[in-house]
Image 1 (cartoon, rainbow, N blue to C red):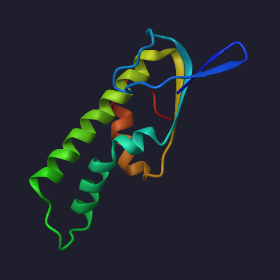
Image 2 (image 1 turned 180 degrees about the horizontal axis):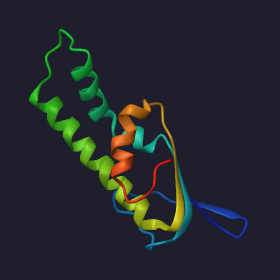
Image 3 (image 1 turned 135 degrees about the vertical axis):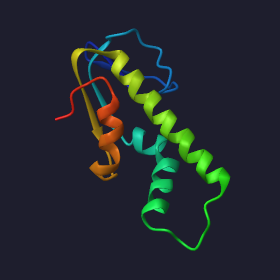
Length: 112
């Protein structure tokens, strides 16, 4: 992630579920693929549910899907926490809006 101070961007690495920023730090957060990466196992589980394959889902697959959905919700809670009131979260995703909207709509912001 990059933090802009003046005309400089500082790149920092941290856990997106536990950001080291104060509440209300940013006017905008841009996510290009983070939520997709975090939700990958959950997305795979959803695809299996939509189009059953010959490969059987294992308990490990199901557990990974549930864990990634939990992590996705945690990322969005942190995004909401670090946004200023009225701030904007912009997510660039390869996933269908039908898959992302339930999670995005559960966060404490208005989804257009």
